[in-house]
Amino acid sequence: MALETLTNKSLGWRWIAVASLFVFGLSSFAAGVTLSERPFTTNDGIAVQIYYILGLFVVGGLDLGVPTGGPIWARGLLWITYFGAPLITASAVIEAVIRVINPQQWRLRNLENHIVIFGSGDLTTSYLRMLRRQSPHDRVIVVNDHFNSIREQELQQRYGVVTIVGDLTLGFSLKKLNLPKARRVLLLGDDDYQAFEAATRVLDVAPNLKFRVVVHCQNLRFMRSLLRTSLGRHCIIFNTYNLAALGFVRNNLVEHFRRTHHRDNVVIAGFGRFGQSVLEQLERTAGRELSHVALIDQDAERRIQVVEEQQSLGKDYQRSVFLGDISHPEVWRNVSSKIDLSLENTVVILGTGNERDNLRTALWIKQQYPKVLVYTRSNSVSKFAMSVAEEKDLHAFSINQLVEDMIPNRWTR
Image 1 (cartoon, rainbow, N blue to C red):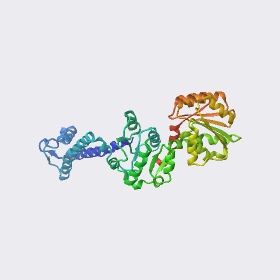
Image 2 (cartoon, rainbow, N blue to C red):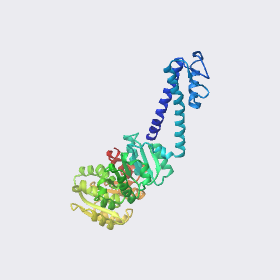
Image 3 (tube, one colour):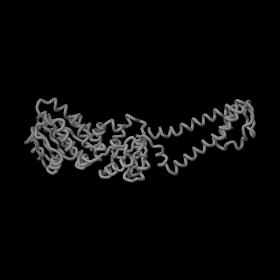
Image 4 (cartoon, one colour):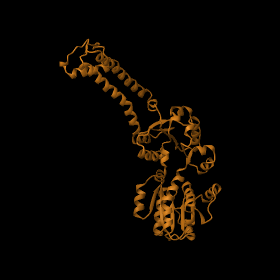
């Protein structure tokens, strides 16, 4: 991985130097040079010569004396070995001391063409999985204000990154990261305001990173507001649910709509960030394929008002809003009075943040309406949900997997 490659490079020049000094020393002895305090002949064998050269790396030539005899060029090569051997030993000792006293400074030396990530959550690991498939040896620095110890070990050992505790809104942390020579900066933390504060400071320190700073924003309203600012134009701003919804609609629903003979009904159970993003993508990519869209949420009325405030919803299809819990049978009775759930051109998306309720309700719906196409959401990839879904003719999907599949390749360059 990247850290191992860096360590190998730092050791590589030293091993080359050691090998060169051995060649110089053996060549000198073969040409007839001997030592003033430890004279020897060629009959003593090469093992004695190697032993004397090894001694130069430990105590120099203090107990061996000075080169004598032989041609001038050979004595010159041995003098190079006399001076070079202890210098290499000293450099190795100094390097070891620096690593012990200030390991972070050692890891951050000679930063160039590197990637800086702020945040250590699932989004970071999704990005790193994608990055390592394409660029196994890129140097990556992951910064966070605190690390879970298990996650930090995973980042270091599985993905070969350097982890440091810091805050990209502080000048001290920014200076250590040598941002003007960075290739890309990704702000993938959980605090939206902190992310944009960090983005502002990063571009102030390294203006050359314009259009190469990626910012994750959890709040869709906040994100849409900032897209119209100069910072929004100079950064790549995204929301995980928006990205996941784009992949979900494009890869799962569009083709299904094309296969059905009539316009389709869609039930979005859970109208939070993911549900809102799914509706937005449906209108953008498949608006003419829709007949009726039903929205279910415990706070549905307020959330639909928020969506209408920020974007104009389509008029080409009928829309119904149902207030209530997705696991309540009464809600589904109300939905079935508006939409025929027994038809093949009906899709039900259980997309709340409660994975258990999503799966349980999906099983109930499939039992009641066998022909309906049912999707159930989990956040991380769930083998349990996928196993149950395969057995019961459901479709399980993961937000994290959708996001990982939709991360653009250009974010790694």
